[in-house]
Every structure is written in C-alpha cells, then in structure tokens.
Length: 165
Image 1 (spheres, rainbow, N blue to C red):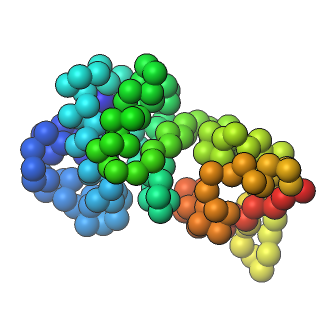
Image 2: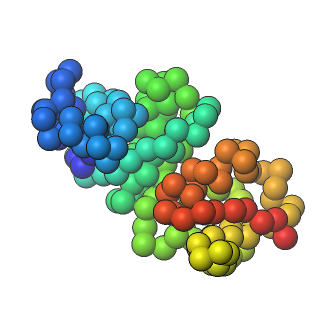
C-alpha cells in the first residue's frame, strides 16, 4: 500500500525522522498521517495491498482523499472501505482519482455534477482556472462553491473559480 508515511510509522504511534520532516515542511498534513494509519488498520480486514493514497484535504464536514491509482480499491466492495474510513474519521469521505486528466478528476470530485469545460484565463499575470458547470446542476453540488474554490485552487496549484452557465 502506498501512503504519504512509511509502513513502520503507520503501524506505530510515532513518526520516524523522515516522516516527521515531511510533516514539519508541509509536504503532508496531520490528516494524511491519520488517514494512513486508519488505512493500515482497515487493511487487516480488507486487502488494500494495491491501494494508493497521495494526500487528503479537509472540506469541512467532508474529507477528500486523492488517489493516483484506482479509486475502486479505496471505495471497496459495496463501499465497505470508504464506510470504515468515514466511521473512523467521523465525517463523510469522498475518494477522488488523481489521473493526468484534470477534467476527469474534477468530475470525480463534483459528481453527480458534470463539468462542461475548464478554461484558463489570465488576469494581471496570474492564471485562473474557470471551471464551467451547468446552471441546472448548481443545486446538485454536495459542497458549497465558496468552500470548494480554495480546495480546488490548492489542488490545481492555481486560482480556481466556478462559473454556472
């Protein structure tokens, strides 16, 4: 299983110097450490050996878990793995695929809302990603747009804004 922390740190209570420096430098968060440890505990009941988890973002009442691999492994058969994660964290969990295709990843994040398009605009020398969504899908969003924009901006590495057409 691939997680931001090494196996001994995930199984034990303390972090090794390498993982501690990643945490201190901001390369990973406390939430990443917690989720890694929970996944190793869940691995005892469900086979998660091919699972991969890169990072997580706190979205208020929901946790977004990003995986570079197949999201189905972290969801589990019948949603058992994601349900166990949600129970351990005490919040809803959403698994998002980090594929090379930003549009597909955004559709995973915003599901059931479909992404019409992603445009890159330039304003005062900075790039802004304008994510276009259908106006009729606005009520179907699971997260508030105002709380979603900073999360997507952090994930994309540039300012993001949602536009309903």
